[in-house]
Length: 327
Ligand code: NAP
Image (cartoon, rainbow, N blue to C red; front, side, top):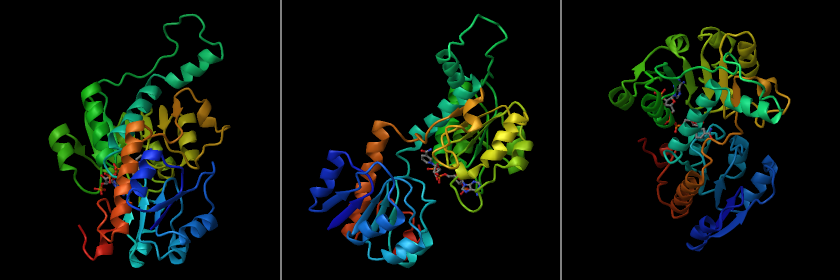
């Protein structure tokens, strides 16, 4: 059968599909596919191996309802109309778990970068501004014993909570719709209301999925409730915070600093004022970007593609309702 991949794959991954007798074609241009291109290529194939933020919406699914499987090489699926895919009987796969540690490490990296203004200080050296030693210059914020607040304590949030607990002895509070019993048991994490999370966190890190409920929830109103000494971190999805409101909150001193691996829009414009702020660190959506993790994500995507093409249940499926059962 035929598989369309929206990026060039490492040879070993491509081979694992070809070894099963499938024909693989790849999008090799250094730009995203347009919706029309995505539809056209998918129409000529039986499976879609989707890397990047291709919009899998109702329009696409109606045109490509023949697809036997759509396997995303990501854990997030906010760019997919899952209900519509289920109606068409198309299983959607993702890659949960294998990227949790790498993404949590990115949040951990941002927390320390912001707390000690590391990226800003590096830029100052490049500008020739090392200067003379002033004991009250370049001061950051100590993390030891400070409260970590997590918005959306799931797989990635758990890994970050564990790192902060053991590295900096940080007490953990979190806001989820339901209890995370493992985090409460193993890390002594305490579930609080959204307002308590805003008011009590010294570092507030976002790890929830992007949805109608979470979109734009970190706005002017939310930032105004946070501590003036607090740090806001987002490695989940940029649309969960309002970027203009974040900039204002930083300029007005409602919060102290921010670290973003995800922005809204992406890529962030090079002239965005956030990039010049001393207590802000921005990364270009590299949460899961380690060699080990990207290979594992692609291997899971291959497993989903092969299962889908063989008419088997996907091992990592976001819409199990497609099989008539919910798990
Ligand atoms: P997960 O295990 O499903 O965790 C998500 C958590 O968010 C759950 O604990 C969930 O708890 C909570 N949540 C969902 N909706 C919520 C709401 N309305 N209010 C409060 N909490 C809510 O997912 P994960 O594997 O940790 O991944 C999380 C997200 O990280 C992904 O969706 C993706 O967008 C992002 N991500 C980014 C990168 C990157 O490169 N920067 C890499 C990987 C993942 P309840 O259901 O109990 O509310």
